[in-house]
Length: 407
Image (cartoon, rainbow, N blue to C red; front, side):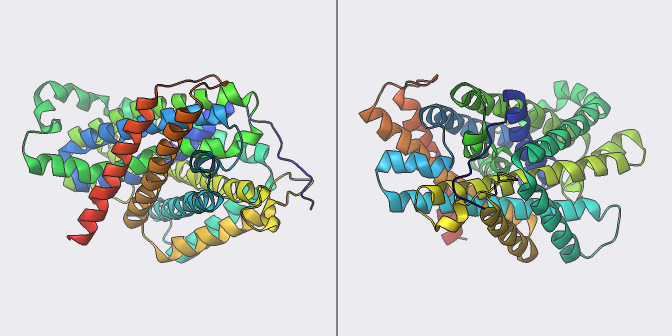
C-alpha cells in the first residue's frame, strides 16, 4: 500500500442518489416504524414531518458547503474552514465517525431482529457474521460497494412500493381519521411529537454521508449538492406515505410490538406470508450498514490525509483503491457497538451526535459566508438559512440534554 494512490472518481449522479437512499431508506422505515409508533402513537407521521424539516434546512447547508469544498472528511473540513481550528475540526470529524459507527451498529441489531423472523440464531453470532461480511465488501472497492448498495437500495424501494400498494386502502380513512394525526394545542400532544422527532430524525440521517465520498464523485460541484436534495426529497415522500398507512392500519401500540414492522404490516393487509418483505427488509437494512462503514472510513481517510490523524489511516491500497486501515478500524468499532448496544438507544444516540455536528456545520457555513459571501460553485444560499438551521439544530440538542438531566 502507498499513500500516493488516490481515490477513484467513479460515482455518477444516479449512483450517488442511490448511495444516499441506501443509508436513509434502510435505516429509517425498515428499522424504526414500530419504535416510532410506540413513542409518538398516531402523531408519528407528524414527527416524521418535523424531522424532515429539521433535516432539510441542514441539507441545504451541506449542499452549499459540498460545492464550496468538494473534498472528503466533509463536516470536519467544513468546521475547519468555518472556525479555523485544526483541533476542533478533528473533534468534529471523530464525532461524525462515532455517529456512523453507532448508526451502523443500530442497523446490525435491526437486521438481527428481521432475520430472527426467519431463523432462530443467536444475536451475537448474527452481529459478528454480518459485520465482518459487510466489512469485506467495504474494503473491496468503492465501485463494487456502490453497485452493491445501489442494487440493495432498489430492492428496498421496491419493498416500500409493495407496502404502499397493499396498504393504500388505509389512506381512504384519512377523510374521517385525520384528526388523530394532527397535534392539538395541548403540551402533551407536542411532547409526543418532539419525543418522536429525535427518533424519526435518525431515519433521515444519510445525506451528510454523501459528502464524505466527494473525492470519488464525477462532476462533484454539480452532482453532489443535487444528489443531497434529491435524496432528502424522495425519502420524505416514502416515509410520510408508509407511516401514515401504518398508523391508519392498526393501533400504534400493536405495531410497536413487532421487531419487523413492515413485514407485519404486509401480512396484516394481505393475509399472506411475509417472507418476501422480511428478505427485502434484511437487504435494505444491511445496505445502510455498508454505507455507514464506507462513510466512517472516508472521514478517517480525509482527516489522516490532512495530517489530523495518523498517516496509516490515509494509506490507500493500489489495487482496491480503498483506505484499508481506516476501513478495518471502522469494522472493529461497529462490531463492538453492535454487540453491547440495542436498536432504540443506539438510534437516539446517533441522532444526538449528528444534531451536534449539524449545529456546528450550520454555524460554520454562516461564518464562512460572512467572510466569503460569494460561492464559485453552483449554490449560493442566503446566510439566514444557515443561521436558522444552527438555532433549530442546537435547540433540539439543548432540549435532549435537559430531558436527560431531569428524568
